[in-house]
Length: 116
Length: 114
Image 1: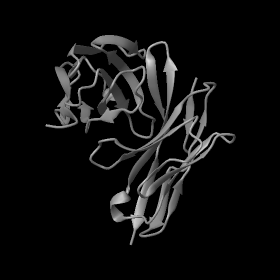
Image 2: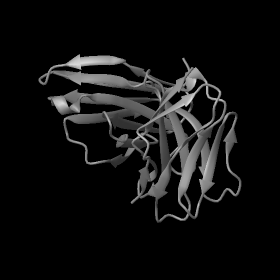
Image 3: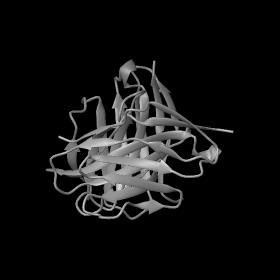
């Protein structure tokens, strides 16, 4: 079984500062993917970034980067130069293949608040 | 319309009502998903459809009945719900459930059961 752990229920960061959201995972699969999604108060889950378990380089997408440490089973999200619009819930997720196909397992999320 | 749409966005129903949630994806995907998001809990996968066939039922009570008439549309029929079923119900789609792994989500339906 797969498990995602996000230990920070809430985080505060000042505008223009960088922030790291923690995510650790547990799986017995050799091949898997790690995702981060953003959920604003409107409810929609917005895909941010993806890291494959065999990717040697950390994924980056604009101001988002994923700090992937395979041996430690961690996949932290780094947001650089925070903006007020980054205030939202952030979910870490991982994909795994079961008999029914690929599934995503989500963590409990981290509520990020960006302050002036 | 683009992406994944869900209607209604908000729904209030009594325990004896019957209602349906609708999801439509305009991405040409073949897999669709229903998730339940309750407060302070991880998203819970409910159902998965791949090429209109149900491939996953995650021990969901029978008062939730999914329907997938084609790869673009997914419904969740609701009847005799309980107050604890109040949650945000999210629909998602992906290219399929084998190769592609990124899922695209709709805005959700906020359901309140009185």
